Amino acid sequence: MTRATLAFTFAALTTTAIAGENFLVYFGTNTNAKNGSKGIYVARFNSASGELTTPELAAEAGNPGFLAIHPSKKYLYASSDIALPDGKKGGGISSFSIDLKSGKLTLINQASAVGAGPCHVNVDKTGKLATIANYGSGSVASYAIKFDGSVSEAASFFQHEGSGADPKRQAGPHAHSVNFSPDNRFSFACDLGLDKVLIYKIDPATGKMTPNDPAFGKVPAGGGPRHLAFHPSGKFVFVNNEMAMSETVFAYDAEKGALTEIETVSTLPEADRGMKGLSTAETLAHPNGRFVYVSNRTHDTIAVFTCDPATGKLTLIQNVPVEGKIPRNICLDPTGKWLIAAHQDSGTAALFKVYQDSGKLTFTGTKVNVPGSICVRFLALD
Image (cartoon, rainbow, N blue to C red; front, side):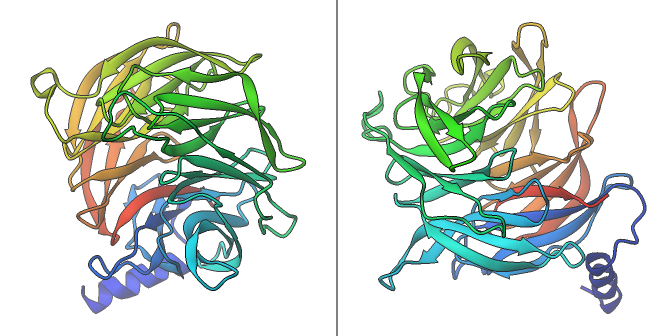
């Protein structure tokens, strides 16, 4: 990189002089000696020009894989390694304060995930409750967020029980994510090991969750649900099945918090269906409600679907190469005009343009280095 390029990157990261819609873009990573990642990285993005700056280290942290930004824009939360009271290292949730001018993060506090292998973190719409999903032990926990952005010790904890159809991958529970309903009354935990999306009622005032009735929605046996997204109308939920390379569409009953399967469709082109060793990673619903996106790991593509807003049903229209290896996470910018794909194994992130009429993606030619990148989150500055 030339001195001029370095100077430009530094200026872009420390000023807000870029015209148009301005965002900070945070990247969560896995950290190890091989990939060289040191923690959470930050870049700047302009949605008018499509300019994405070179990411820089925002905070050192151990395996800050998945991130969530507080609605106040003051705090960021990460599933990460933490120091336990006995001095040993374990998994947990870390809270950081955000410097909006520089994008840098300062650690506030940490709390234990209680379970093993935390892989996903989220914050409810009030900013009073945080959740974590533990893949290793198949459990979920919730936390009260205090006035200063810090998190409490776990306010509630639920150990999932049971198994799925695949004895190798589904011998026990594997909670993979927790998301919130549009009205902020329920949370939904995808459990790969159980082929279930477990449903909880949430109480932001206390930071607690309680099991709902009905308690879960089911995907087809052996699917392995991973992540989900709500349709902007709130009528449908889209769940990517990691193991089956498929997407399940549910009808959502907002009063009861209930999920009813509508259909399950493949995320692969017809010629590649049945290929072994593939897995999906992320699901996104476009803000206009007409398109859904799913990242296909190992296949290294993004599946693009059109969505019928009346029925929720999906039609696969494109499998675009992701321009890297293992698209662990994809994220739409809040304008819906751009998509960033994080490549875990190639240590890069690529920027795609979203065509608003068709929903199709095209690679812009912009690719930045982010070692071990597995999560992308936008924070609007304007």
